Amino acid sequence: MSVRDGAGNVGTREVQGMGQARRIITWAVVIFVLYTIITSPVRAADLVQVGFTGISHAAKAVGTFMSSLIK
Image: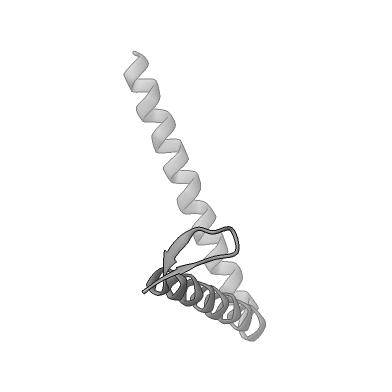
């Protein structure tokens, strides 16, 4: 079933439902992350450190790859 929003755009209820589902999932993830940080801050800090280490290694590998392309 087609519906019109306030701007006159035609959309479907499925698309609107997907937006609401995305919002609910986002809030659930935020609440879970906050719960994890509050209940186990040391473990949360370890996970953040592992994440940043992975990002650092990935950036270094991309830099090495780009340098090898130039040579």
